[in-house]
Amino acid sequence: MSTPVYLVEYSDVAAEAGARNTIGGSPVLPAGESWPECFCGSRMVLFFQFDIPADIPVFGGNHLLAFQCRHHDDVPFVESGPQLPDAFWDGPTNPGYPGPFWRLMLHRDETGPVGDTEKTFSARVLTLSAGSDGSADGDYWPLFKVGGEPDWVQSPESPRCPCGADMVFVCQVPESYGFSDEHEPYADDYMIFLGNAVYVLACPVRCHPAAVWPVPQN
Ligand SMILES: [Zn+2]
Ligand SMILES: [Zn+2]
Image (cartoon, rainbow, N blue to C red; front, side):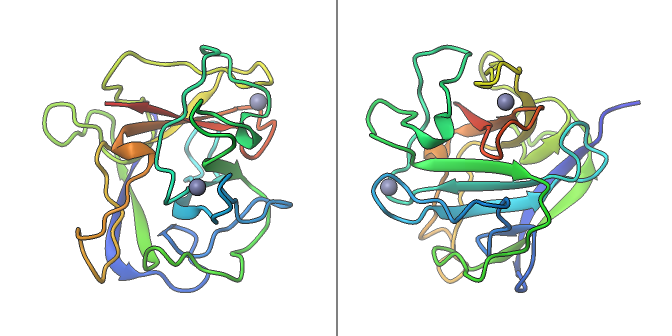
């Protein structure tokens, strides 16, 4: 039996207040976490969030959130190799910056959306629909998907959580994926992690809600 895979797509449908699967919108944060800020003091942009379908191994039933500063669009780069630095989520993950400029979080806390909304994009509905590994756009262009096997465009990478656990694949975002505001389609696209293909891996032990790492490739 093959592992479940869900394809993620975003629509022109405006997300209603309280929606959990969105581009922009109101984040459903882990208990005890507030809306993350970049080292520069700006509130980070909520790029997307969704509930991971229950039948996905390891992370089914968790809620994933992806934030990054709109002024500091870059990629994490650490010298430590596969072993990630202690509490990397609160520290610098790129030699060019003194502190965090992105934050990915994964949790299953019984929290609801915060009483504030992302202003960079209009909140829109994300849909997850059953797919399969190997469904690709073209020869091997990675799709936006959750679960299954990562479609690496370079060599596979295996980051290790500060707690010692080998991180497990959660989802991937295609290269050059633009998050645009519906009022100015394509004129004002925002990309995450410089528009790399991004492979999101997380600590299977869930030692911290932000023990989630983006591997950028192109
Ligand atoms: Zn910033
Ligand atoms: Zn861990």
